[in-house]
Length: 259
Image 1 (cartoon, rainbow, N blue to C red):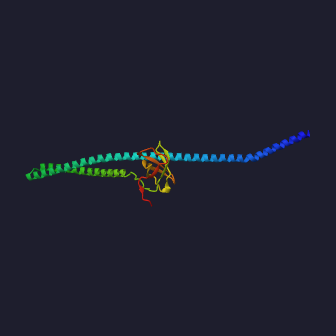
Image 2: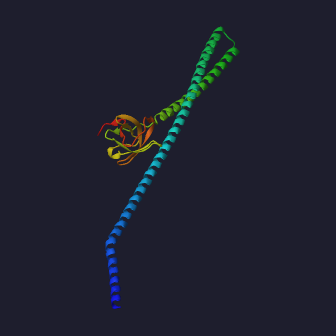
Image 3: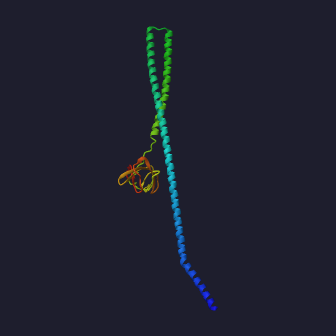
């Protein structure tokens, strides 16, 4: 009986020893697993945050592009309307000028006729009638002259507006020769690119770059958003000669002199 109790005590002590040893060996491994899981979770959350940020920037860029296109359409419509108004006003001014020239001819003819009748000794009634006719022609001529001045002023205003609309086209900003890099990301659906060149290389917004591969021109792009070492660009309409690929080289279309 005593031997049985002694064996039971030894078995319990052995079990406790095994548990203690297991805790000492397994606890660091468990802690390491927990730390690795936390690290992976943080990295995943950080990656998700960057993904959301890029998606937001993409949405903003697309919205800005749509707004720019709407502004361009509005300006084009205004330009077309102003051109039509200018053409109509110019036509009206030419018609008025022709009418004035005709009235001047009629006025001279009446004046010549009056002088001839006076030389012939016409009656007072006849002279009075000719004078009244002459005055009427003069008044009509003066009215047309004033109307022509108003038309000419309007034509000048429309011509000024037309020149302003034509000058609204934004000039491409100069791009320094050192602003060179490569394509990092390509979205073929929206012709949207991410480049590895940014403001550190003095790349300006709206700057124009060329994309090449193995010395062959692939596309012409315009920069829409610039960060320190990244930029977002869109392929310009009509300038997609080939599909742009990741790793393609980009360089200035019209580089400015290096400072």
